[in-house]
Amino acid sequence: MFYLIGLGLGDIKDITVKGLEIVKQCSRVYLEMYTSILGCSLEDMQEFYGRPLLLADRDLVEQGADEILAGAGESDVALLVVGDPFGATTHTDFILRAKEKNIPYKVIHNASIMNAIGCCGLQLYKFGETVSIPYWDETWKPDSFYDKIKLNRLHNMHTLCLLDIKVKEPTPESLMRKRKEYMPPRFMSVAEAAQQLLTIVEKKDALERNTVLNEQSLCVGLARVGQDTQQIVVSTLHGMRATDLGGPLHSLIIPAKEMHPLEVEFLQQYAANIKLDDYNH
Amino acid sequence: MFYLIGLGLGDIKDITVKGLEIVKQCSRVYLEMYTSILGCSLEDMQEFYGRPLLLADRDLVEQGADEILAGAGESDVALLVVGDPFGATTHTDFILRAKEKNIPYKVIHNASIMNAIGCCGLQLYKFGETVSIPYWDETWKPDSFYDKIKLNRLHNMHTLCLLDIKVKEPTPESLMRKRKEYMPPRFMSVAEAAQQLLTIVEKKDALERNTVLNEQSLCVGLARVGQDTQQIVVSTLHGMRATDLGGPLHSLIIPAKEMHPLEVEFLQQYAANIKLDDYNH
Image 1 (tube, rainbow over the protein chains, first blue to last red):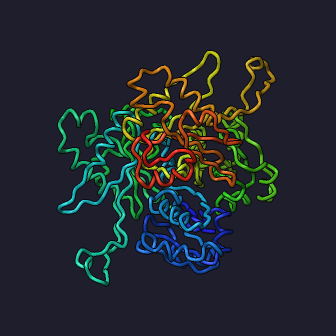
Image 2: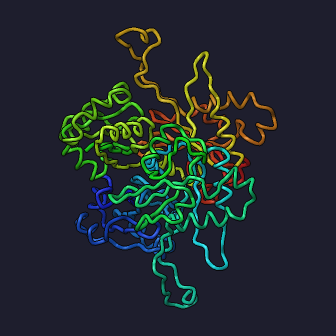
Image 3: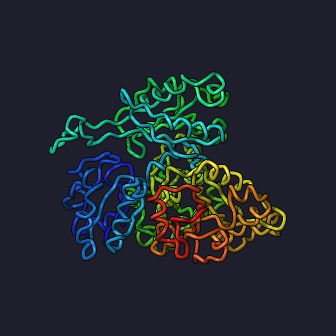
C-alpha cells in the first residue's frame, strides 16, 4: 500500500493518530519538504516517529515516482507532506502514477492553509478563487493574479494569496551543468506581496482604484498559521508593505468589501490602528 | 485554557496527536455533533480517549457558551468538533465569547470538507465561492445558490455545494411548547441536490441552459469523504439524480467548464460511463 499522509501545519504533533500508526509500520517513509515547511526539524521528527525518514526533495518527488513507489505493491511505503496531500498538484499526479502501476493507495487528510486560514475569522465559504503571487525578477513580472483578485472583489468574495516559495531552485549559471548548484531558499513575506500588489495597482486608472483596490484597501497578513508563533495582522495594503511578521510561511488575504458583522468583530482583534466598524474599504 | 479541537472527517483516529494529548488532560471535554457527523459512535470515542465526553447539542453550543466556558480560565476545557474548528460560524462566535471573558484559547486544526474535497482531483485553488443547498419544503424554495454557481461557471471556477443537514430540528407543532420534540435527522443526498438544481435549471431560458448549466452538465458526487467507505462518482446532473451513494454526509461539486488535463485524468477514474476527454460539458 502507498500512503500519502498530511502532516498539518504546526509541529511534529499535528500528524493524526492514524497517520502516526502508519508511519511506524511502513517499510520506507519519505518526507517531502519543498512545497511547504513545518515548524520542526528532520531530527525531531525522526526521534518522535522512532524511525529514520528519507528526504524527498523536489527532483525526487517530481521525477522519482518510480523510486518512491518501488515495492509499494508488496510492502507499505509512505510519503509525508506538509498540510493536506491534495494541496499541491504534484501529489495528485503522484497518486495517478501509483494507479498506473496498480499500487493501492490511501490518503490521510490533515489541515492545510486552504482551510486553516479560517483562523482570522473570515468565513471559508466566502473565499473565491485562490491566487499565487510569484516573485518578480528584472524581466519577468507576471500580474495575472490581479485580475482574479479583482473578480473576487467585484463579487464580494475574499481572496487568499499564496506567496511564492523558492526552495532548491538551481542557479541560472548551473542550469546547464551536470552538477546543479542551488540558490538559498526564499519565502515571500506579506510586505513583499503587498509591495508587488501596489506596484500593479498604481498603474490602474482612478475608477479602478476606487472600485477595486488601492493602497487604503484592507488586507490580512498571516504568518506561521497553526504554529505556536502564529501571527495575524490587519492593515491597509500601504501599511502591510512595512509590516514584519517574522519567519515563513506568510499568506495574504484581500477581504471582500462587505463583511459579515461577525467577521468584522473577529478581524478587529488584529487591527491595532483601524476601527473596522466604520472603515470604508 | 479553552481548546477548540478539530476531529477531522474520518474516524476516531483522525484526531491529531496534539489534540489527543489535550483531550486526555482536560477537566471537561464537550463533543459537538450537530454541524457534521463522524463515522464512529460516542462510546467508541470515550473508550479510545479513556475518558467521558459531554454531548454538546445544538441548543448548548448556540446558547450555552457560558456553561461550556465555565471555569476554563482556571482549568482546561475542550470542545471537539468534526472537521476543522473554523468550518462553522458558530465556532468563530464561540471564540469571541471566550475572548470577552478573557479566557485564553487555542485551536487545533484538522482536515475539513473545505480542503478534503481535493480528493476528487479538482484543484482546490480553482474553487470559487462555496454554496449551501438547503432542503426545500412546500412553501420555501430558496434558489440564490444557483446564481453563485453561475458566477463560478462563467469564470471557470469549480463550485463546492454543501448539502443540508437537519439535526435536532424541533417539529413545527412543538415549537411553542415548553418541551420540544424533534424530527428525525435528515441529510441531503447528492441525488436530492441534483434534483433541486435541475428544478431551478429547467426554468431558465435556452441560452442560459447552454452557457451555464443543464442536465448534461458534469457533476461530482462525494460521500463520506475521508472515511474508509468514501465514494466518488462523476456523472451528468441528470444521472446524479438517480445515483445512490449510501449513508451521509454527501457533497456535490459542479466543476468548471475548462479543466486541467490532470484534473480530467483524475476525475476519469470515477466516471464509469463518460469519456471525459472529449466530453463537451
